[in-house]
Image (cartoon, rainbow, N blue to C red; front, side, top):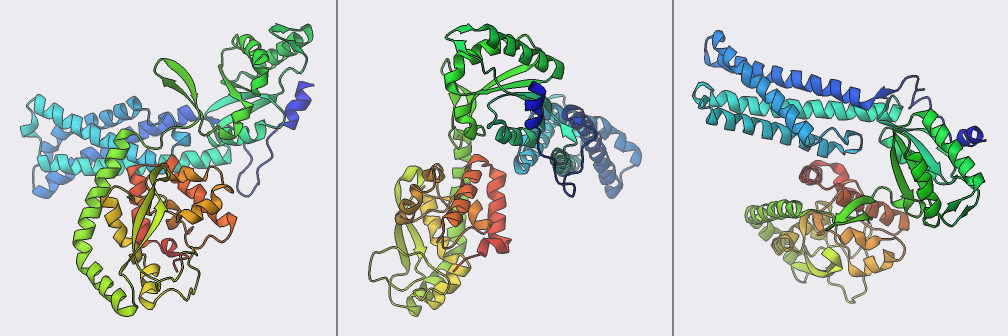
Length: 486
């Protein structure tokens, strides 16, 4: 019976064109071990080659290059040690590329800093060329980032093709639930080797019936024969007494045991085990940014907004004059929008439309007759958003974040997309991930707003300083960032 049910849970066969048939599974740990060893060799090699190249450039005798062999190996060893200590490879299969690359650059920075400190403490820095040290630092950082980018691409490709597995898992749960969970596990390289139903016979209070115990013993035997690394029990909250007893039986197996309430299966990506004081909790959501993240983001915002206003002040004055000469009305347009934590803020913009005669909110549309001649240029180039640098200095906005919507627009979609206000869990931005991906402009359909919301939430859940820099570069140089700008 179990074999028939297991067959019904078998994952669908992938398309041959994109996902070739898997004939052999490779363990992720061995794959990463070889990649880390290769990175060690490459880092040591480029560090040593850089010192030789520098000596050759300045005309120093090649025989003097030997003094850099030990530091080159030391740098490679420190990069590896930092990466292992900070668990850079532990969650490689689920890390976004920008975070993995940032971790690699940080490991290289920490490694060369530790080497510099060691050279100073051991009083051997006089024999070590400062120019060589700086060149090695730059080249090693580039090499590590390049190696990490290649490794990330290879792992993702292997996972998508099914050529690699991180762990083997058995799913125990309802017949309608494991499909979605299997997709999430497969994306991380976890291969489901069996999917079995929970015992269906009666479980009277805390006492297991003979029939229930017989089914449970059969499940334990099947799991033991499958030799999984992990067993995942997926059961509704009402079945906790039976689940607890089943967990006791499964604990006899040499495998990690996980329990996931079926009621929360749609939130698997956010659920974590956390601690509040000395109380262990099931953390359903977390704060979007840590205190350090907020400090880093705010420091960058102040620097960028301050420098931007100073450098752009002549151009801003010319745009203000053009607006004033083009049509009657104020230079700036201020509108109340939702900011961080749904708090209302007054957002600055260059006025790009004729002064409205009523207070009814209407989104701008393509060829909108309300848009002035100067305003059309300002909107297409995003220049109308530049006065929001003032909002950034005031702490109401950030350079990068979900774009602030007019309050009426938020009210229109709040009950249709849940939880819509989650996009306000960080400060709104002058530019954002949704905008550079082309999801800006008029949202006259639910689908358009849904896509924008999904990109905003992705940004919040995957924030990093490197991610912000990427969005800024795309805002400046990507054509997609100007899609639907009218």
